Length: 363
Image (tube, rainbow, N blue to C red; front, side, top):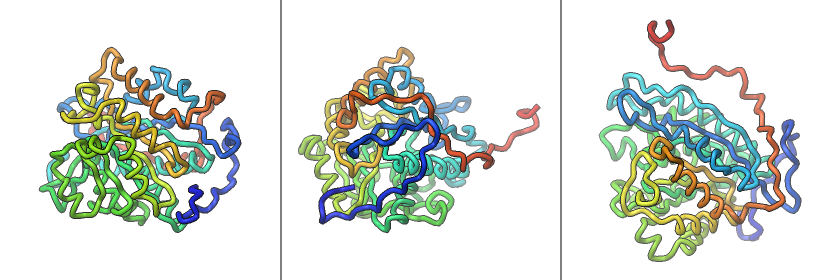
């Protein structure tokens, strides 16, 4: 981890044997990117009564644009989520599909931990923002193991800080994931495995929220550091990234969350909740590049790209080109990605939560 003697250092990762087909770690402490699909749309409300959110298709759309070979990445497979079915959810019922979100978060955390343990850089292709609960849970498990704090840099157009203390009701985990990850909300999502909170408020930094974000005052009152788009632009993307890293200087490492709706809809309209006033691709590339160019950054997730709004693949192609530029500090020209994904035997055999089916559905 960090070489600065004034910073906390995590314990060495265990020398667990690698699963079949996973290459040995790169020499000299270099990290290979390992791409894991997390196509969960469980955290979003249905766009229409008879449809489901399209962000579950994002990993496939990005892979079709040759993302993995262009990154020199290893294919770490796909963690398939439970079926999307909000059922008869109504306001006041709590977070929709909470059981499935919690189930998926546990398994995603295990996959992320394994990739980090193998000395690789996990790049998680979501899916909606509720996958943050999996990565935050992974950071919390590592924190317990190492007795050191881990942090989060949250690059998103929205604060996703809705919770029972500031809203009349909750319902979609993707709009509440920062609140849930910091311990605000129902216990079945905030206290998975008794590890609440997964992240401390002082170890979370939000970048790129809109100036008019409805929860910006709540963030300030809670002590969560943040910069809106005007502030980010005022200081520049590079300096903003450095500011965020310095704020997390007491952490042994941090996770990077990137929601593509941080981009302005003029360049990225293929999201579920586009808002004017976002940043440009060049700014996002500079931001990511400066955040991943350090061993302190343990991994990254990408969320909310929706191929349903991109029938010609134009935005997928532009997004992949931008990711390749942004992740350049991690790309090694001589990397070769083997075709065999990581297998997690310990996760086999456990039942997947299945939404209630009527007799007509099972007939």
